[in-house]
Image 1: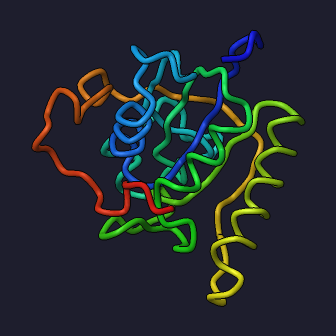
Image 2: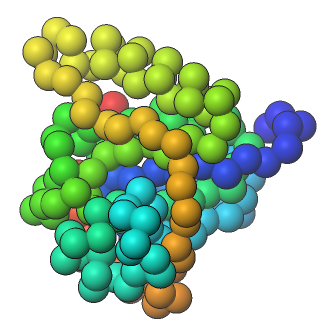
Length: 173
């Protein structure tokens, strides 16, 4: 692992606890693979939708995305991994979860993160989707205000291994 200072990255890819689960399953904090800490919550919504609850976000009325915020050491690896963990070609949905709250998005925190996200997405598009005639629809937007989800949703699938998990949250490539 590099000696670089940890960074914060924010990703949306459908059901928030499923996104967190696959990151922690494949990059366990205990195995020192770059992920240091995670939190699930909401971002990217209307300015007047402050401190939303899970039910409010699920209703689709806040325009917030269910998201994962991670502290990590892998500036390039995190967006690549993100692209491999869900269907980047479906707009506002993952599996049976439909609505803008389930959109695919990378919320960048620095100009470098934006550049990396754009480059990785373009490379992923060319390598996996151009020949199929499919298009990645992942939004790449500046990170805004973050709202933590309720405590019982943090590491939800680790606490509830038989809980709902979107079938798109798996390694695709």
